[in-house]
Length: 280
Image (cartoon, rainbow, N blue to C red; front, side, top):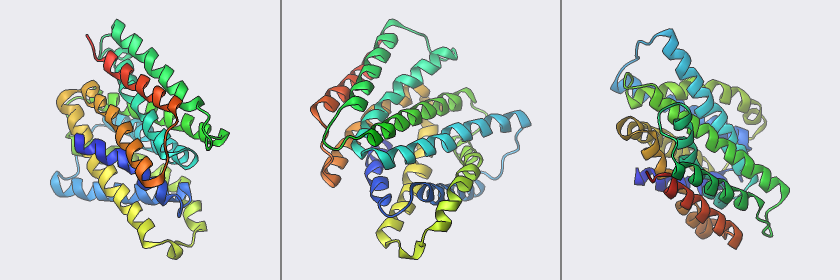
């Protein structure tokens, strides 16, 4: 999981750089279509096509729409408007949301530390979003809000995967939710792809598409869902707290996106909220 944290944290910078060459929706459609085909090939090679009930297909479809279609839309559109550092810092909210949703669904107990941790984390998010650095415009803040929306989608997906139980392998869950989420993303992004001159895109930008599809999406999702099955959604979700550190450092080093002091305080409050919410 630590490897996934490093990959996902640095992925904010890689995607942000690729968006300099691609329209956001075009990048999203190409990236996710490639990832979905790769996951399908991996599933057929390792396990074959599973036989599932209509009810289970319905749940997988819902998870695919929330955890892939809506999440990817929020992630790509948000990252195109805000900084890689902001996106990484806000992603630390995810583990608290996972625990809160687990409590609502009866998978976790609501405790005083969880409630206070949520309050701390939300306060941190408000600081990160409302900070006014020299490059933080209204568009940047709208991007921040989209990233927060993506955190909610990912938390719903993580808890939903746990609620599926042990009937499906992590690989099958990952592949099938990608396949159910991919068609809508392809349809939404198709006009943007058609409007681009893809032959003019640099090899480096294409490398960003391939890398972000195969490593953070395919490999990252499989490891994530395997961890959810093995140790539960809350303990796995806790690893999200390391993503803002990796994202902020790589954004600072690669793109010069130095966080403001207020954003730093906000990030610390989010991390403190995550730590507090894990206390019993």
